[in-house]
Amino acid sequence: MGLAFSAVQIWQASAPKPADLEVAMSSVAGPQSVPAVSYDRIRKVAGESTPFSANPIDITLKNNGDRPALITAVIADVKHLETLADCTGSGAGPAGISAEYSIKIPTQPPGAALGPHQQDVRFEVKPGAVDRMSLTIGPEIESFYNYPYVVGVDVKLVHDGGAELDAGSYAIVTNHKAVEEHIANSSDEACAQKNLEVLETIYAYQSIKSSELDQLRDNYRALAAG
Image 1 (cartoon, helix red, strand yellow):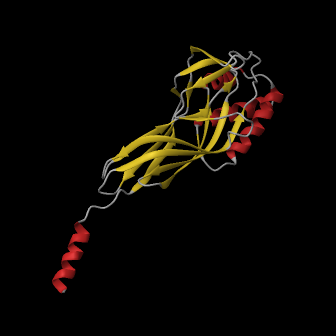
Image 2 (image 1 turned 120 degrees about the vertical axis):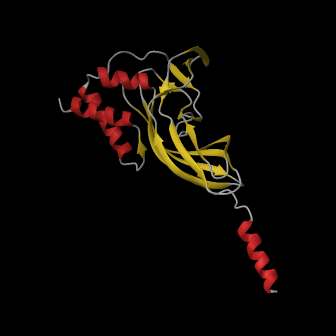
Image 3 (image 1 turned 180 degrees about the horizontal axis):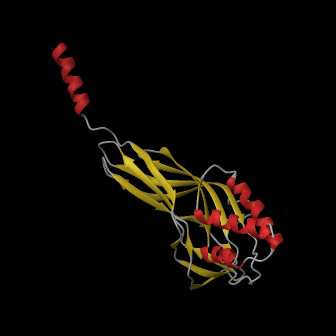
């Protein structure tokens, strides 16, 4: 019996460990290009390709197990979706922008944006390896060219038989051409104060935030202070 018990212990000790996935590090990267087209919302027709950039969420994953870890879905639980007013007085531009985000947030009907949105993926982390997953998240259709959108989102990764891994909370901004215009050319003090109040609700949300949000807030604070 002693020999048999020892053999079982040795076998258990040497058996491959299942996938053991953890988030080693996460961040919001600087603006990166995302394919996008202009969009006529009235005629429901997509137009030409247009320059567009947004903040990717970078999640570094580590698999401590002896078997591959397979991520099969991403759940983006949207807590905030805010549109900043145009403080530049430069006009609206195209009726809308449709970007090829990893996860598109529906904006219709009203209220559809908030809550969890799941996107199927296939992302494998090999045994003992570290790998990085990059995600872009934003509205399905973004209205007008000089209106930045701010998104606050909790991210979970579904892997290996339905387990959910908490991958952090993030606050990001989309449409960086609009962001650049706001930082360089905002001139309306009342508009800046309104946008500052919106951003303060985002800053109360515990999350990793893009540096562009800091730049926008600093810009609006200076303008609102006169």
